[in-house]
Length: 158
Image (cartoon, rainbow, N blue to C red; front, top):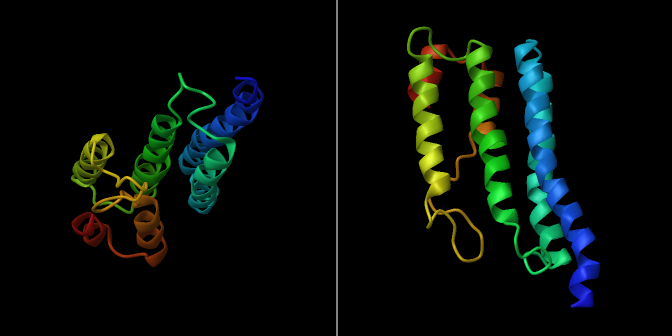
């Protein structure tokens, strides 16, 4: 019992680290609304680094045993949805990388399909790998924005 009590502060720090991705998503959103799309993508890259490392820290901290009434995996999924799906679509929309008139429908399709994907109980294997397309729209959005492809092409691709 005392080992778990001593491990709790470290576990909560790991959860805080995971949750910091939401703050990075917010910073990316602010940058997008200011028209600073390069900065927005840089914030998302930082969020991806957090996401790529938080699982390792969670295993080292002995989570979930250290915080049994808190679901770090659920927190991670919420932050992932923001940084891998919601904010990238917001950036593409604000940057004019989606077609006028039907760009909102493209965004809706991505948001809804990814929401269902994240909520699927078999979205990940037992060793925490995604099954199917893992909703890494942040990478797709970065390439579409950087490539300068026409908005209609982007809409069809998405």
